[in-house]
Length: 74
Image (tube, rainbow, N blue to C red; front, side):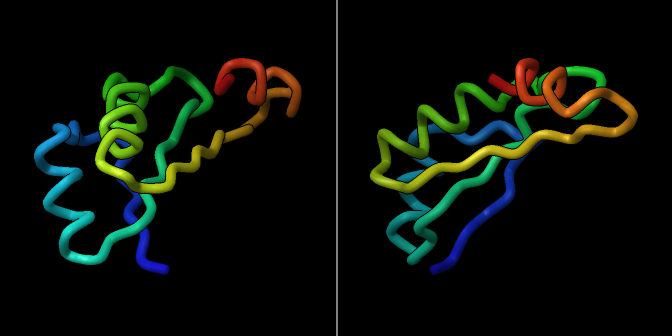
């Protein structure tokens, strides 16, 4: 499976559809950097899903308790 990590760049629906047509099947986004949520994360995941891609997210824990990082990402 081919996947992209697109945490800090914006991905339009058209861009996601083009990547899907090229064979990219997964878009992964950083949902919490340990300080903030990357601005395009939510829209990128929605656009990728609308384009028929699978999506996943990850969080950075840094020096925060794990539960804090997970709650921020959620």
